[in-house]
Image (cartoon, rainbow, N blue to C red; front, top):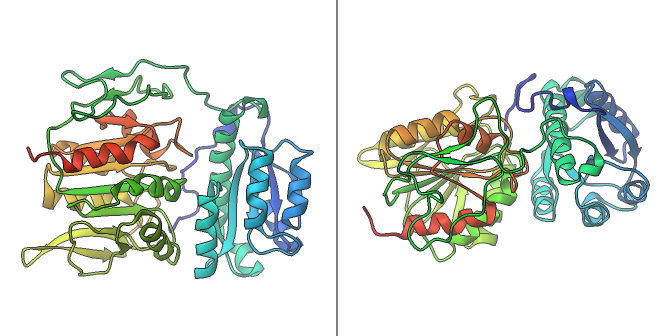
Amino acid sequence: MNDIPGRPQAASPAASTTEPYRVMVVDDSAVIRGLLTRTLEGDGTIRVVASVANGQMAINTLQRQTLDVIVLDIEMPVMDGLTALPQLIAADPAVKVIMASTLTAKNADISLRALRAGASDYVTKPSSTRELTGAESFKAELVSKVQALGEAARRADPSKGAPARPLAPRPVITPAPGAASSAAPAGTAAPSPIRSRLLDHGPVVLRPAPDIRPDIIAIGSSTGGPQALFEVMANFRGGLQQPIVITQHMPATFTTILAEHITRQCGIECAEAKDGEPIVGGRAYVAPGDNHLLLVPRNGVTTAQLTKDPPENFCRPAVDPMLRSIVKIYGRKVLAVILTGMGHDGRGGCDHVVQAGGMVVGQDEASSVVWGMPGAVAQAGLCSSILPLKEIGPFIRKIALRTAA
């Protein structure tokens, strides 16, 4: 994802907390540790309580300290980040780990392996201390991710401290007139009860589920998205007839590796979309980092178009332009799925989907790493279904395979 300084993806969540989020920085370079510490402590919601040089020291520190977030380098002497990660999570299952690496194919692959092993997110470090000193977009991204994940850590373990915006116990989910309470197709088990923050907009209202068999499946995700994508798309093994298009907020190189991991893990052919290539059923296409992915008709064939149009919602690639372009071609035969992520990217595009008669599914808050994107869509009343992560893949498969309306 290409971010710009000051992006409002995590809106100073700790303004009302009693104490800042507690962070440990783990990097073998003392200079990098110092720069990361100054960046984080420049925000009043964060306190760096430990700064150590390798994975073994991080494990030892976690046994003595209560932490919300760990920023963990990959390549370190004594014990590297990938080796330390499972031991850190075993020591404190509620702690949130952000992997930090430079932007190389090798580190992108390791970062995605770390996400599969339990890391919550990643940041791509500038490749030199001089670049890091002036990298305002990196600093803004790091701070916003630490804030959001610190909030999630405190919800997972209240003993760490009070979250800024605690979950409401179990607010009533009000179905829209004519909507089934589960919004599930025939033969699908009713989803688990939804836990949702009551924001200024009031309780979530589910839309009636349109009786359609989609011609395309579109997925948007950000923080926590790779893990969610692996879980959802594993249910598509054996093939669906529809094409699947994915916008995951990620930089270039990472999106290439993400597509490769989806192919290997989920048994579905997946690749970065290439400009001008036809969109074929049964395949998955990932928006390349630093490019918006649009679908356009060319000589009667739906093709991919990559653009360097300005970021939307502070992101490129962004979900909204992808969804708008899809609706122009597929009309009501669109199934949009919004998974975990910071910010509200996807909300505008999903409004286009429902106005055309399509369906929107959102991930619930309890299973999201950050309930920003799916929460924005849910609170806007655009979802026909809001489901735990493990139920989303089977739900999509049911909808995709049912008899055409």
